[in-house]
Image 1 (spheres, one colour):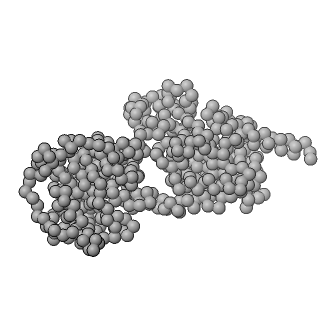
Image 2 (cartoon, helix red, strand yellow; image 1 turned 120 degrees about the vertical axis):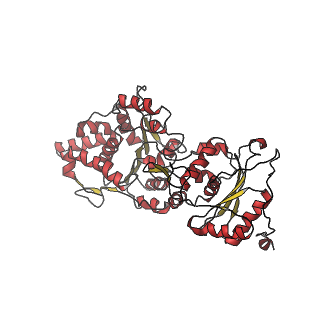
Image 3 (cartoon, helix red, strand yellow; image 1 turned 180 degrees about the vertical axis):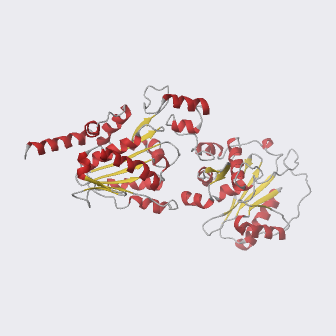
Length: 477
């Protein structure tokens, strides 16, 4: 073996053990202190996560480590994912090309492609591939994104992991089966209270080495790549507690996801909480009804009186007659003042017609209809915001665990200058079920209902038409 080959082998061995040396010698860069820390931790860290503020150079670190793994391990395989195919292409994949172009050695040994980077001598067994999933994919389809990624030397890289679905992150652990060396490497902004980055920083913290990168202008360990005046300006403009500032300047998780209406801590605080009778006894009694549209989705009747909500009635696989009868029975037994039914798509409309025949006139709620407040895009957005604000201000919830996920999963965005809530079908894809409990409760905020009650909570208005129809008699028989 000649001296040149021995020198090359010694150099690759050094770079394998010390990626921070490779970054300096191969790319001619001087990493920031936190970047040096990540590079030094990588060889001994099967799971390494970087929770970052905006713009500290995290994608560059992912790229340096990816090139290190490709260059210094025999026949490695790397699967790379991001929050979308476009994001992966525009960020990490572009970054890989940038650093390859700075090294004649890498250009000679590897072929860069739009979806695959391969060793020219071993293209079938020595590669890095871009993995994506359709935006409409369900959890099982998302989980298949990393299917088939097995090798003696294998790695998963997740860029912008703050927004990657849990299903993708959960399947990454399969790479540890049968590998000599395996790594999961992720970096992202803490935008969501779910997903791989959130798990690495909370419930699975003991499995991960977590590096926290901040742009806090008063922190001596801040990233120098984040302009200090820009950071101070954001804090002055929006406030240090603003979710956008927490994420992008401080690199911290917000109390709720940046585009979620309400956070899990806020919902859990109200779950099963107590409220005195005199705090709600004078308020109207309202039933919110969401009609299950498919066989696996329940129909829910949710009672609310002011800041008190009560255990819902849950029905499955019932027609309009039985469903309307259940609403009428609850209406009578509870002496409700109104019932508001989601009539979107016509399903609830049949229940309203059946209720009319039973002597009860329900209020139809069209989720796609016009809101009372023009700042909302539609009625669904208006009632959901009203419901979440009410919970934040002290409305208590029954001890129904399903409602936590249903309330905290939907996101909001802007359509023009109007607030819009994520479509119910998209929520179902991510949640795994339709948010019918939450939609039923939201219906109780569709219209104001005024009623005068005595100090015992009894209505002083004349009794509404009664019915002795009991939809459950047949079941009992």
